[in-house]
Length: 137
Image 1 (cartoon, rainbow, N blue to C red):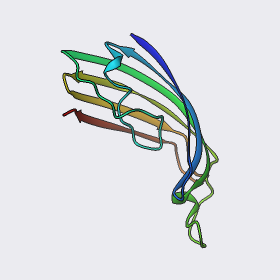
Image 2: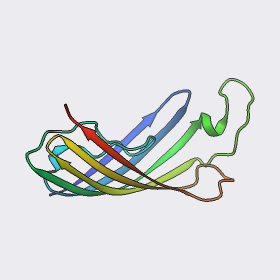
Image 3: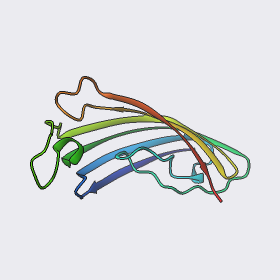
Image 4: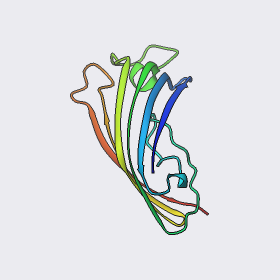
């Protein structure tokens, strides 16, 4: 099976305020088992949904997305008074790819993320991965 999942979103709060757009493509066996593995936020959206499957299922995925960032308290500093800050990049992009393996009510997934620089003096872009183990009960 194959599917393309477009995404649009926004966050508004005292920690982060941004608008985002992106898309995920998945290829594999029985994609109805879930809506993608969990990811470290902010990221392209996924669901916490995991359907019990009979037997073994798998899929690979790739996602691309971008955020227009209005406020990030970790880079901009305190919202209501002067504090340390850095000059943030207003546009941040993500490329994510990985694999998910599901057997009955257990999902093991790996997601790798390549993220553009989030502030001007950042030495290099972010490059990290995450394993996730999900058990439905």
